[in-house]
Structures are given as structure tokens and as C-alpha cells.
Length: 569
Image (tube, rainbow, N blue to C red; front, top):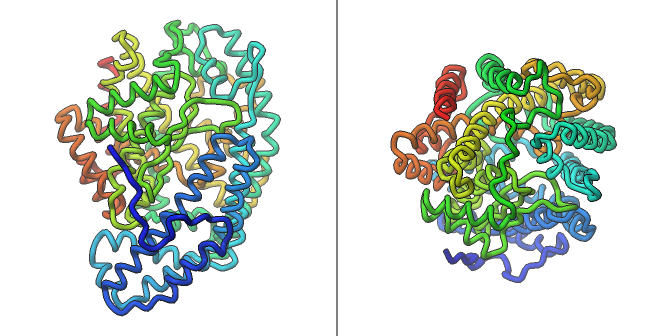
């Protein structure tokens, strides 16, 4: 599909954001403008939206380029410049614009429209949370949290005479040679231990600054502040606690059964830490592709078979250079789909090494990408700014909807079924990890003055509740107590993780529906994604043909469904 950036009607096409003064004039215009009619108000909203899209896309590209090569100081400086010199200046102006938005006599009239109401309630929340004294703290947090990516990206180990990334090293933990696995695991542990103290200090500083941010805004703790900041209008912290309990009660026993079966096949009484990912039947690791190009071509072929529009989304991104898929030295860890609100064509970043997990990551981020395309023509940038519970529904559903098409990568049916089984078992295993990370965060921010030792002890304690007790960590206790440091979200996007659990249940619902009527499930999925954030989360889920529900009863219904599907493999 041919995509062109819409012609700007307010911001100069040749704008270069090299100083605060280069954009201040636009804020001055919006603040000074007289609004006498409803038409004036809607035009003002559109101009404000255009400015937001331009700024967010500029910041996005700075972040993308920095994560592709964390060793390039100029790229890092460009991003740091934006978060330390531009964003702090933006904050008070954005607050004044939000105030002008809600003070308009036409606010109430537009607020009757559901799409505007959903957007306006987020604006009102921002107004309630804004504090002048938090501007500097926000800037410091943005700069500090960026350090995590640089520290992680610099972690490599030596293997067979070359330095390899942690992503590539992790793929070796699937190899059948236990001596190799043990050697690689120990090297990874030693390398991570070098940064453990640095990451603990960084996290302590982030927690303290976030706590101060919350106190300044009148909250008892950062958790309560963040729930409001994230716009969690449709569930509470108590719902999260109930989710934690349900995972422990229903999912952990299922995982233990799977792990015990694996342990029996390995002929061991307990796993060692390097046994977690090895195939118990003695098979080599699944390797669905070799290069990022193969991954992309196969993904496009799969997307085409689900819906031609989906395949064209990936083609367009490829043509525009909006993909960076292969793992390489200096690249930040992880994977993401970064929405670009002005052009409406997102960017996919990942660290592919040819593993099955990379295939899943690609279709996951591809789901996010399709979401960006389907919602790109919505009128205001605020309509496209998605809550994570909706964003992750798009991506996690795509993982499952593509499963029957993985024969693009696996010509052998036994290998295909093995990949599907791995996917379903991984879903069951990831749910306790999601709940554990979330429960850990609640404790961290409820107890912001905790010591590093208390933090480690709490993590180990929670790990026992969510673990199967089948792994022997003797000699590697230090690895176990700092395992949370591998979760980027804790450092960069606090409290953004429970959404994966909520959305995973939604995705299972979409997949379950596709078993009955595939075309209807896809049509409902597309209809839901096209809404952006113009309806409430429960209504978006309802449009997708599923329930926004993460109670124990619903969790059991879906867990039983997964159990049946696993037995069929």
C-alpha cells in the first residue's frame, strides 16, 4: 500500500527541533488563540493533535536510532537532548493547553461524543496529576531509565573465540550438550554479576525519584499515582491481587505438571538452571529461519493468508525501512513496535537470532503494527494513544492466529506441532512470571525505602510462590535473587506488565473464537483494532468478540481450553 504523510496545516513541513525556541511558537499560538465557535474549537484540537504527532514522532526516531546502536554517542546525545531539554519545557505548556481544552464552553458538547469523552478523561487526569516540581524529576527519570538499555546492550560473553550478545547466548541454552549449556550459563551469570550492583543502584534511584514524584502529586505511593497516570479506569489494584492469587492457584500447578513430565524425560530429580529451555526428547532447538529477511518473508506470507491487508502492512514497513530485525553488537536488548503517529507507519525493532521465540516476537510486533495501520486515520492523536490492555490484545492474538500457518517455516509436521506445543506451554509459563513481576512491583513501591537486601529477599520469596520448586539453584543463589533485573519494564516503564496477562486471556479468547468461525474472529479483531482508543477497554474487547475479564472463573475456562489443545498436540 502507498502511504504518504498527511500535509501539515499548522506545523511547518521543514521544522527542525534543535532547540526549545524552534517549537515554542506553536504552543504560544495555541495558548493565545481565540476560540469563538465550535468550529474554532475543533480546528484548535486538530492543530494541537498535529503538534503532538510531530513531537512524538521526532522523539520516537531519536529513541529508535539510539537503541539500534547504543555505542553511537551522537545518537544517544540526540535522545538525551530531547528528554532533558525539550520535554521539561513542554510539560507546563501541555498543562496550560489541557486547561484551555477543558475550560472551553464547547468542551461539554464534544464530551458527549464517546471518542472525545475517552480522550478528554485522560486529559483531565493529566491536569489532576500535573505538578510544576515534577517536571525536573520526570526529566531525570527519562534520562536515568535510558541507562538500563545501554548497560544491558553492553553485556556480551566470549564463545568459540567471538563475543556474542546475551540473546545469542540464550539460544545456546536450548542445545542438547549439557556441558555447553552449563558453560554458557555460567559465563552469562558472571557477566551479569558485573552489572548487578550497578543495576541495583540504578533501580534504587529510580524508585526513590518515582516515590517523590507521587508524593508531590498528593499520593501515598508511586503505585497509586501510576495507576491513575496509566488511566486504569476499568480495574483496580485489588483486581490485580486477585489475578495474582488465581495464577498461583490455577496456572502454577499446570506448569508444575509440564515441568515434572520434562524432568522425568531428562532422567533427573531436579533441574539445574541451564536445563530450563532444553528439549527433553533430545531434539535440537527449533530453528525456523536463519536471517531476518527469511523471517520477514515468511511472516508476510502468513499475514497474507489471514488477511491481505495484514501482509501489506509488513510490506509497506519493509519498503519504508521501518524494520530492524537481526541481533547485533551494540544493539539494545528486547523488541518493540514503536508507533509513529504522524506518518502512521510504525517501526519494528527486535534481536532475531533464528530461534522459535524470534518468530513469535515477529508476529507479536506485527500485530502491534497492524493495529497502528488500522487506527492511523483516526482524527486525533489522542484517539490513537492506546492503553496497553488494548495494544497487547492485538499483538498476543496475532501470535495465536498465525500458529496454524507456521508451516511457512516448518515443513515437517512433527516440528510444527512441537513449535505449537512450545507456544502454548510458554503462555502457561509466562503467566506466573507476569504476575510475579507485577506483585514484586506492588511491594517495591508500597515499601519505597527498602534496602537492596530486602528487595532480593522479597524477590526470592515471591519466586517460591510462583515457582514449581523443581530447580536446584545451589551455587547460583545470586543469579536467582537478581533475576528481576532482566525485565526491562521494571526500569523503563514501571507497572506496564500486568497488561500482558490481561491481554493474554483476551488473546486466548480471540483464538478460541477463531476455532469456531475463523473469518468472523478476524473481522471482529479488525473492528476492535480500528477503534484505537475511542471506546472503553471492555467495549473494545466486546467488539473483538471476547470478555474483558481476568477473574479466577474466566481464567479456569481458558486454562481448561489450553489444556485440551495441548493434549491434541
